[in-house]
Amino acid sequence: MKLTFLGTGTSVGVPTIGCTCKVCTSSDPHDKRLRCSAMIETEQTRIVIDVGPDFRTQMLPQTFRKIDAVLLTHIHYDHAGGVDDLRPFCKFGEVNVYADGQTSRALMHTVPYCFAENRYPGAPAISLHTIEHHVPLQVNELSVMPFGVYHGHLPITAYRIGPLAYITDMKTIDESEMKYLEDVDTLVVNALRFEPAHHAHQSVDDAIALARRVGARRTWLIHSCHDIGLHEEVNHQMPDDVQLAFDGQQIEI
Image (cartoon, rainbow, N blue to C red; front, side, top):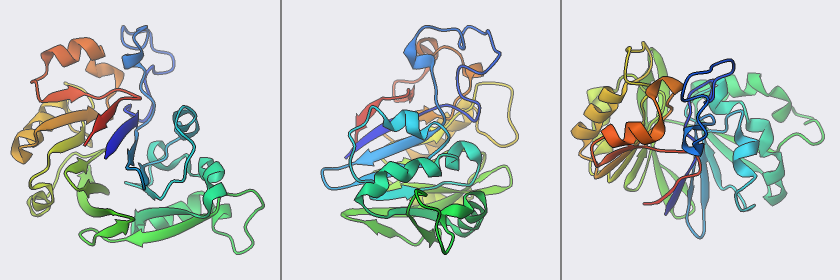
């Protein structure tokens, strides 16, 4: 199973419009961060987690093949604003999109033309599936377990796929959800910046603390803003088993 980080940035991306800090003006491609999205692939299956406003750009370099499932974490624009860009993949049939009840309802208001009885010609053909936390879903040979974390007070859906756990936009996690992180080998989790603390996002220290609780063999940090610092410098400061991910990076699970 292969994981591709399609985007590792926060809601405004990096570089941030109008900013002249050392990160936003860096020439290192590792410091260019599109909005958060990831892709999990096997020979038989392709799953995408979140389709933000950069989704078209993120998919242009990728092999054009069927998307078997799109897993949404929540309705915020930086995670769901690219739903319309699923249109080319409808060549392979309806695209199955999975989201919790709150996100499903909001999505139908966000892109209502995708779900109209008489769908606008050219609109993406989406089959929307409402999922529940702790109820596994099967995508071909892959079993996916949705579970819950909190983005401030907003519930977010995290996903466990075999030895991989993918969590974004988390500030807190209930103790009862920790069992879904047992025996995780590869943890992907958000880390906005070092300081100051944010009301709805983890800091780097928070993310490392979670990695230690989980006991993952390796942890990749995502959803990072320009305040986190230069990619190369930050990774030199990190423990060996915790690293900043970067856009386009591929890892084997």
